[in-house]
Image (cartoon, rainbow, N blue to C red; front, side):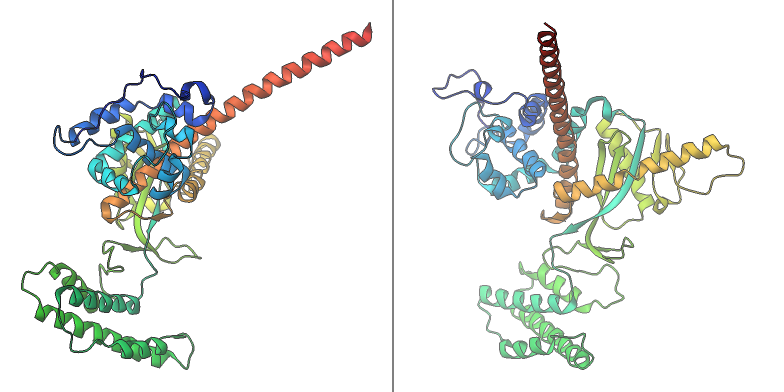
Length: 441
């Protein structure tokens, strides 16, 4: 059911946030700058008019999502911190202090599913608008990175053991009596699988791996024989059979049971040869605003350019004139009205001025690397905890939006500090000047 509206003019016996909070605080300023009405207009049709209980305020839920990624905390933590922080409460639309949590942490999950990728993109669009003229730049820099999924490092032995555990759980739920549980056998095989890198243990570990895989296959076939033809577990069993059939050279391998869409991506890093997750494309202006953030599976970088530029057009209303990329995007020099600039050996006919201009442009492109590092370290792009492919895309856009909001908060903070610095400096100069006059008399 649609959420109930609060009357902002309603008198309260306690102190009003407008009276007690610091108006120069970045979160207070951000709460004033964000156009909350656009979220209410866009998300209100997603609620029923009369069925069910009244929902939580749309501003509350959107505010919690923004705060979560700005502060780099979990759903549970942001809900808990909301009950302790006056600025969080004011940012989410409260007029005075409210004791207790605003909602259950799981309600944030349901809200993300309700608004989907389109709703999250609207939050990203608002974060771009907040940055004002800085986002109206005709030159952009584009790069891709890997957003790792919250899974353990995948090995065949781990997957086979998980299949065995899942099969036992299905048997317990359906009341199937297995011919053998293999509990003691698996315990002994686990001992044999240890220290596999030692030369004396390699053959023993390899033999144990093969035996575990055989046991997993037996249990899958036994469960399938004892279940109805169209069982609710048939999708899981088909997934188990795909994992057992795959080899080292298989294409589209499965690396996780609960996240089967995870890709193995190699970006040529010396310290981390393979990363397991999905590819994220980031579009940044020369002024430092992220105007595009999109998720992909494991496409070639050059194939991500067109969808990324289409998103920039949706979010900003204009296509950039130049897009600077690295050599991983070889293949395209022009997409629509946008010129794609790729580092290359300068022509002999180029003047010194032309060479210097291109060199500076590509040096400026390198500034996107530390920005990607900040998004990963500070705004939850480093490890994605959201479910499925939709969760991948949602996390990327929320992380980019949080970066844009944080950028403006830092800008406001520095401008306030600069103002006070000038004020105190002028007062100090005045005191020195008056002292000099007194000494002269």
